Image (cartoon, rainbow, N blue to C red; front, side, top):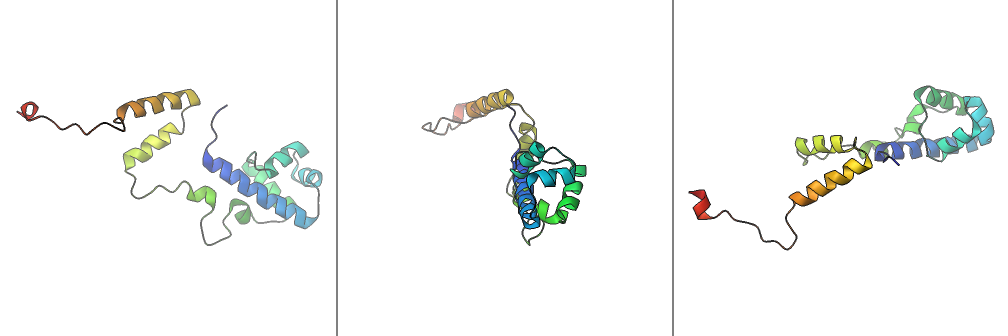
Length: 140
C-alpha cells in the first residue's frame, strides 16, 4: 500500500471533523448530506471520517450543502496556521539540500524508501565507532 503524505491525512481529518460538526448542527443524517452534495453515502462517510479528501468541486458543494464557509473546513479560522499546513513549514535550520532530498523521498514508493534508508544507514558511522582522523602521512 502506498504511503499517504502526512499533510493529506491531516487535511482530510480536518475537513471530516468540521463537516461532521456542521452536519450535526444542521440536524441532518450522512445520507441527507451526501444527497445534498451529490455523492454516495459511503463516500460521504469516508470523507467525514477523514479517510479521503474531496475534490475541489465536491468541497464547494459540501460548503453549500452544509451552509459553511470553506475556511473552517480547511482550518483557517484561527490565528494559528492549521495543523496540516504547519507540518509542511520547513525549519529555518534545515539546509535547502535536505529539503530537496525530503521532497524527492516523499515521491518514492515503499520499496524505494527502504533502499534509500539502507543507503543512508550505510553512510552513517557505527554508534560505537570513534571518529576517524586523517593521518599526517595521508595529508602530505
